[in-house]
Image (cartoon, rainbow, N blue to C red; front, side, top):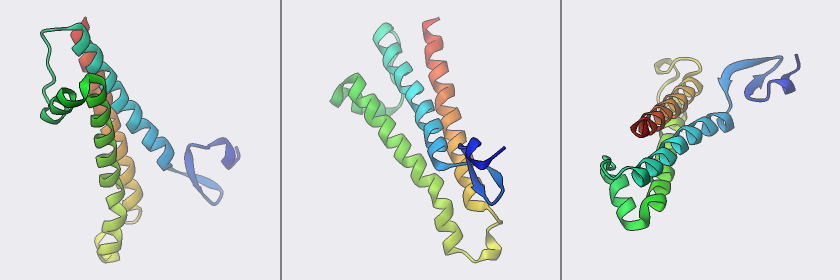
Length: 132
């Protein structure tokens, strides 16, 4: 198996590492948040007895419409998670080597992106359950 056949993994030398690269992590995050946004818009459109519970999203939807507000929420959420996930590099640079474990930035980045993507995906599925 060549390194090129495992395109979603970062490679260092002969063997790929276990951490997915940033593009795939971002795709997972955006996919999960998109599912959440689409489910929110769909449920709000189809059910009159359901409302958006998050203040920021509700405010943005009031100002920019359901789709526009949901899209802006998606953008804010993705940017926020990216900033948080990439902050592991800043922590690694600010603190002495002995304070951060080996591979901390990659592990923190991977965990943050995957956890946020999974959470938003879960919320999207949960929202669609209002239609059942």
